[in-house]
Image (cartoon, one colour):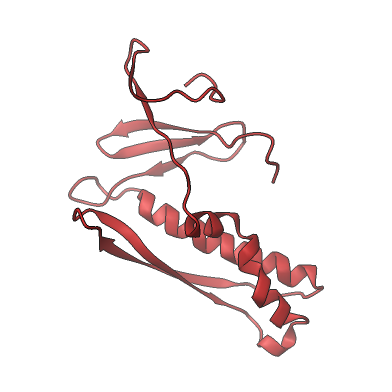
Length: 160
C-alpha cells in the first residue's frame, strides 16, 4: 500500500443513522452502514462492527502474507473476533478490547518458520497497530454556506 496518496471516503446520510459509504478513487462497491435498533434499523454494520472487522481482517491478511512469504501454502483461515464494550469515566461506550481468534486449516507443524511468523506478523498489520497505538483524529464541521463551524480545515483535503 502506497503512503503517497491519502485514503479518501465519502459518507452520505440516507436516512436516520443509515449512511452510504463510497470508497473514493476506487472501484470498490459502496457499503451501507446503520446503527442497531432503537437508533437505526440495523440494516448494515455499524461503525463498531466495522472497526472490529477491520482489525480481524488485517490480522488475518497479515498472517496469511507471512505464511506465504515463508513458502507455506495455508488452507482457508477462519477468524472469529469479539469486542468488549466498556464505559469510560464519563459513562460513554468505548471498545475496551478486541480479541481475534484465527484458526488455521492445518496443524502448526505443517508450516515452516511458524515460530518466527507468529512472533512478527502482528507488527505488519496496519489497522491493528494503528488502533493499539492510537490514531490522531481531527474533525471539522462546515455549514451549507461553507462556513466553518468547528475544528480546522486540513489543507490536504480535496473538495469536501
